[in-house]
Image 1: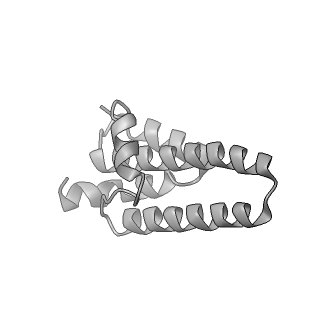
Image 2: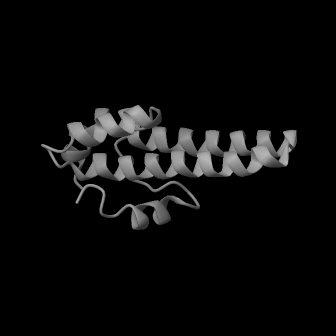
Image 3: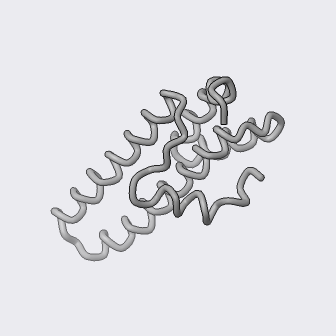
Length: 110
C-alpha cells in the first residue's frame, strides 16, 4: 500500500472503528474503490469487536469486577492504538491479535 492509497482511504478506515455500523458502512462504501487500506482496518475492527463481545460474554459470567475492568482497559488500549494508526495512515496490525485477524478475515475485501 502506498501513501496516496492510504490517504484516500483514511476516512473510511476511521469509520470502520465506530461499532458494527461503521464496519458495514466502511465495507460497502469501499466496494467500488477496493482500497486495501480500508479493508485492512475493516478486518482489524471486525476482529476487535468480535473478540470484545466474546471475551465480554465469558467475563460477565465470572462476575468479577477487577477482571471486567481489566478487559475494558485492554480493549480500550487496543482500539486507541488501531484508531491512531488508521488516522496516521499506517497499516500496522493490532498487537497480539492483529495478524490473526488479518489471516482469518483474509477473504473480506478480496
